[in-house]
Structures are given as structure tokens and as C-alpha cells.
Image (cartoon, rainbow over all chains, first blue to last red; front, side):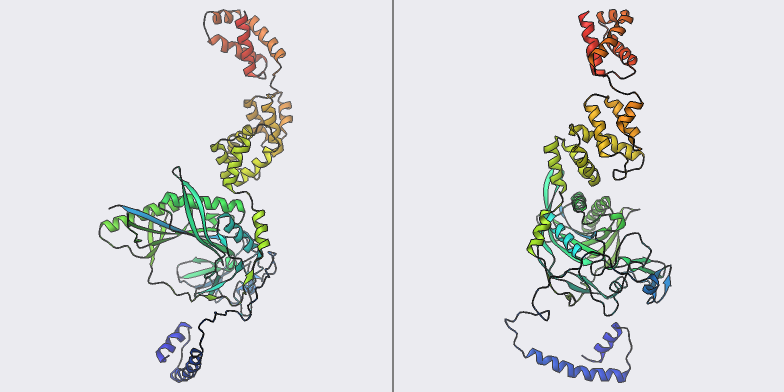
Length: 94
Length: 474
């Protein structure tokens, strides 16, 4: 992980880093990578992947009864811009 | 060069539930924007998804109807992408362990049965609806989180016609199951197709082009037919087919490039950590199996076998689920089941169409229609009179009452008709002479006089028979 990688990731996450911050993160990452590298030393052949903290199945499903909704005003409080009850964002057509 | 068309279809289907896939917010299609949302749907920090039991049940029903193997351990995964139609920044779907695998649906194309294999059905959540304006996008999050299933076919479809038949049959089946209202025009059923062509006899698949968001069964067929021709022409000119996404333009009836596909997008799928695997008990799946509604194919076979309907009539009835539900009610109340089918298909449906009504809202109850059918069958009234009575029944009137008020009773009493026949013959000696001289027209005239004298109430067949007998005996 070099400065360019970090810059690119920061860009994806939509924030800027100054040189000082970049150096600090680069340093931190070196430590992190070394620590993660330790995991590679563990032999996991024939060990099944474990995704959840326990292996028992669960059975709970929610019944299809309507519960609460929030008011339109509350829903729109996070909108950067609002028009006719809609969230308004810059146009990006996927 | 001869080419073979290869088509695979992906269908997104909104399930007919009261609430969303992972939240208890209610959903209806026509609602004011952003009024059917809660914290879970908006991806607020700290919220957790909770799986809707009914959505799982409906997905299982769809799997059973389409002959898929069900994975009773429900697991979800995250599909990560950053876009405004998805407030959480990811969609919860079933990438690694779909609820159903390896099913099929049989269609009949040009008189031949064909099996279309279904690769998988998985559950996921719908995204928000966006309205793209000139330089802004308006978002309505009501649809975010609505339960969906995606049905992915194998590339077993080899023409636009087959594709349209497959989607039509699927739509009908899922509609009968009541798992979805399957309204393509409202977006509760959405269809993407992958089209490629390859050289006849070759095992190498051509480059596939995706056509997105086809909004009607007719357009599926048009879009595929157009796209196959476009690809053939391109290859004939020595051009390459590019992997791309296109859309169907209804005005020009052509497919239009939307975007080129550059490599596969990496969605960084991983198991959804907020939902533990959920085990569906075998007894529950058995229970769903036992309570499956009757599917169209089975219903059609039953109509032909139990009620003596011909294929055309039986098909007319099952084409419209509500009509078949009405028929099921009606047929329990009548003796002449074939007459019941005819009255429903030809007469009542025609009148409903004329008045822009439909079978679910009609004021003609099955009970009243059965009474009318019985009167026709018992020859109390003629079938011509029957039509008139039915028309008068459209506002909810009782058929017996109408017949009585209009003095319509058909006279089938031989003695009564014979009396009129004798009167008519006495009054028309010249017609009798004409008949004897070989003028067959005279018979028609005499029967007409009998009908006139009876004020249209004599049973015409009986009147004709009696006039003939009398003339012969003379």
C-alpha cells in the first residue's frame, strides 16, 4: 500500500488527504499489513470457512404485518435537496 | 451462413406481500413519494434487517411451481455498489445460495412442446424509483426494500416467439399462484433478455447483448427479433458484436445502445453478516406444497375432462384467472357446463367489454347467471331471449324477474303450440297449397306466423316440427 493507493481509496470515499495525513496513514498501514501477515502463518488446510460467530441455524422470520413508517418530513430531513416530496441529487444515469 | 439464436431471460418479480423484504414498512404501488419508508429502508445507521416470512413462503411457492430444488437453509449476501437508488450502499440478495435451483417450465411453440430450463430463483430487495430530469434526479424510496425474486432461465430459448411464450406462461403461472400481480406496465414484473447468435452446428456462443427493461410481452418478441437481425447483418458485414446493454425503443421498434460493458463490475459479494442462516422446516415446505393453488395447466385439463369443454373454451377461461374463478363458482350451480362456459366466454365477457367492466366487479352474480342458464337449458326461454335477459341482468337484476316482467316465457307445451299451429293453418289455406306444390318457403312463412301469434314465445324448434307434421298429415 503506497501513497498513490491511499490517495485513490480516499478519493473513492470522497475525501481529501494532505501530505502529513498521507504519511501517517502509510505508516499505520505498514503496521497493519505486518499484523495481517501473521494470519497467513496459520495453517488452514482442511479447515472449513466460518462466516458467523456460531454455527446453529436460526428459525425466526418476521410475520408480514405492517409496523411503523416514519413521516415524509422525517424521511426527507436527510435529503441534500428536496422537491415535491422527493430527494433531489445530481443526475447520474447508471 | 446460418445462425442459431440463443436467448436467456432474467425476470425480476415483486412479491405480493403487505410489507417489505427486511422491514415492516407497508408498500403499495400508488402512494405519495417517500411516505412508505422507515429507518431500515433508508439505511439509517444502527438498523437491522428482519426477513419477511410471507416473502419466503411466496418464493418457495414459485420454486415449487417451476420445479426447482429448494435450499431450505436461507442465506443472504451483500452486493456492494454505490448508487443513489440504494441508500445502504449495498443490496441484500442471494448470490451464493439461491433459494431454488434447476427447475423448468414447459411451453408450446408452434404446436411443439419445449422445455425451458430455469437455472435459479433468488430473493432480494428492490431499489428506489428514480426520475431523471435534465440535470437532476428525483428519488422516491417507497420501492426500496420491496421483496423481489429473480428468475434466471438457461439459454434454452431460440426465438423471439419462444421468449414471449415463456414469459407469458411464467406470468400466468405466477399470477395463479398469487405470488405477484405480474403487472409489466407497473414494473412489478420486469424482464431483461440476453441475445446472441452463433453459427449453426458450432458450440461456441456468440457475444451476448443484453436488452433491458422490456415492458410488455409483445415488446420482448419485437426486441429479440430486431436484435437477432441486427447481429446477423453486422456479422455479414464483417463487423464484430460488442458486449453491451441496449434498450428497446418502442417508437422506432429498434434496440438502442445504452452502454458498452467494459469487463465485469466487481460487486465484492460477501455473506450478509446481519442475517444469520435461517432453516425452513421440512414440514413448512410440505405444508406449502399441499396448499398450492391449482395451476393453469392442471385447471385446463380439469375443465376439459370434468366439464367436457373443448380446448379453445377451456383456454379462454384459464387465460383470465378471475374469469376462471367465476367459472369455478358458476359450474357448481349448473347442469349444462358447456352452456355455462359459452355464456361466460361469448355473452357475459362481451357485454362486460362493451361496458368497460370486468368480471371481478360485475353485478351479475354466479347464482343469477346459473338461474338464467338453467332456464335456457330447460327451454323455458330461447337462447335468443337469454341474451336479452343477460343484458338486462347487467345492473344486478334477477333473471326470473326480468323474464316475468317482459312476459318472455318460451312456450314448450306441445298442446298450447299445437293449438296455435292449427289456427294458423286454418287462416292460411293458400300457404298449405303452396307447400303441397313444392314451395318450401311456405313452411318458413307458416312457422313465422306461429311465432308471431305466440308473441315470440313458442319454442321455435317445436313450432317448426309441429307445423311440418301437420302439413304432412294433411
